Image 1 (cartoon, one colour):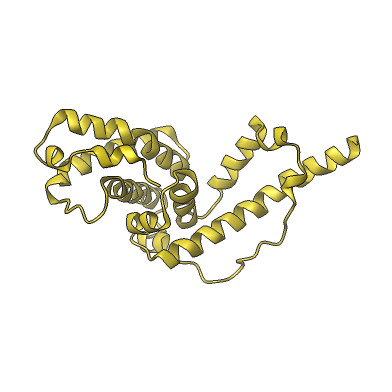
Image 2 (image 1 turned 180 degrees about the horizontal axis):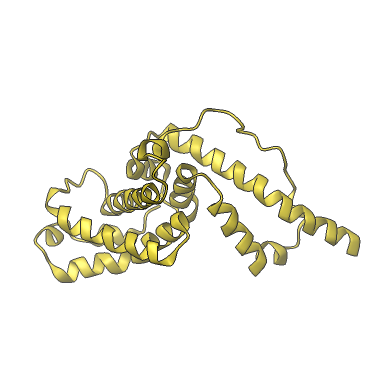
Length: 202
């Protein structure tokens, strides 16, 4: 669910150029948009650029915003496009269409799984565990990573994610499944080593 504080913002005031209302919008959404930029691009400066460009674009295009989606979904759409364009600039051989396109339904089921429930909670919540999770997220293809960030990390709904990315609900669900399976496979190696270590110490 998108942050409920977004529903309290006045679109009328924003369109009228109310600086206090715009500042409140910036305060509300700066953190999630920065996190999205950081996880997509892996660089704090690039994330700052995404953040600044998102709000500059929002300010410029507020008069055109028709409120067919929520303000939050609209901002996530702008931020996602900014992140994808940044990736496009860094990888000129990749087009924005490539980043938005669905992969064929191949390799949907990863090769390796491990039962993480056997691990002590401290292993799952350790600093090293979190770093491995972040590295696993960073390793995802950009189109899968973007869906995972919006749905699983920022917690917005399937419908809102679809609206933000210009996808169908089915596209989002498919990409989300792929992303989760890829993450599980990537993390299986790390956690299987810890399980072996735990078993040896028993």
